[in-house]
Image 1 (cartoon, rainbow, N blue to C red):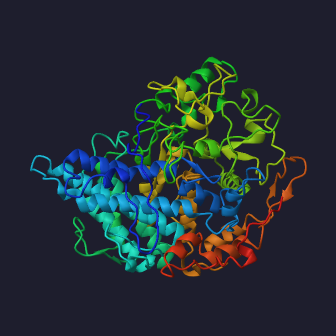
Image 2 (spheres, rainbow, N blue to C red; image 1 turned 135 degrees about the vertical axis):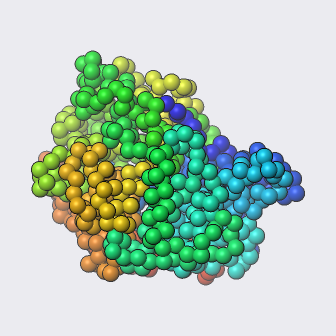
Length: 636
């Protein structure tokens, strides 16, 4: 098993907007050299490439101002599949879930980080031909250039889905005119799609089956991400809710290396996805549980030997399907693109928006179990085989109830439900709540859950200590530092489900259903919507899926997204740790439907950045801070 492979090796300051008269900050390691001398050789461009990727580590790990930076975690909290939850002090998570804010700059972190990645990608693209490439290494040049375009497109995709219309910066030479927001629909998405087309043209196919954990994008990652971006644009902006019968064409930018198309239609996207399938480089893992670290061979051995508590849920697994067997787990054959992590976290890491835990998949800590009995936080006989954490973003009652209804109505059991979610009452019967816990549904996240072993129950250590290649965390804090599970950004299952949605051909969706052991159904949009929700539960895709499926109703209170979010109202949850007296869940200021319709699912742009741009960027709809509906309210 390949592990502890970092997506980037350069740690440097993130880019920020500083003032209307200043350029974007750049990597200090680069600015110590001159444009005439750097990059001067291929290794220099590889260093720039590493710096471009490294932004993902601070997004995927790291904890600033009480909130994980991972935008997919934010989208989980904003969907109907998660609550904000956590303790009374965890107001940032609950703010996200209720579409409110406790401060004018509460959601500034990712705005700054993503522009940092865009600045680095721009520099990589502009300076690549400072190197005198030869015929022998021209393929390396094209791959590195393609990765620069791909990463810029990816960062702009996330930025625009979070904040909507923002400045489109495609050069390192910036004037005051660039500090003006651009239309995401008409300007930013054409650039995103163009960047992915350039990536497809310039990048290679990768080596071996899949990426084998090398952390770099290839042409197939670009094809898949292009499909995701196109489908959001077509659904959210053009109102094409059902792409199996609808279409939309997006015009691309001109004069960009590798962008060989003038426009992209649905047919083009289908061809890109079919290219991934026909390549034979990716496959669905045989057992869905193989994707997640709780299926590791050490825990399975405990189950088979009857040692300790013996985690029965994986006892029927084939040892060849364990997470830490080659082809499964990190770098697995289903992974198309991911964030990877390394045993390099240090409390002393410093710099703009760098964080001591940026090389750890800190999502495992945020979704970890709180367990309320005094001195029992993470105690093995109460949480085995899972470990402690912050307990924020717990799964909603809605996802469990809707999933159970689908099973009962269809007469089947979906392996993915228990493979994705922990049923606390039935799996961890001694689990207790903290006295300040709120919005507790009775469920927790099994995907990405921190796992330890029963062999040393007093240690509360991560199972990673037993894995080959482990070295002691420089944080000297396994509970916060030892989280190395890849964060999936694109899985082959998504390629198959996107193909079914675009074509109306159920054969691709049926493969995903068969892996889960559920009946294979004919294509309908409803069946496809359910499959995406079950397959990618807690992976951060649900919220933007809901937004693009809202179609003709758009962003009204009658839209698919607004109605799904409003269905949370009245669900019974545990508050203040009192399991015996549940209370009905209600929105803290108005309603989820009203807040979605008002905001269209966008976050507020940071007021500090609006001020710095001196009127060039305006606040998103629904985020007038004088409106009490936008303001965080203590309700527990």
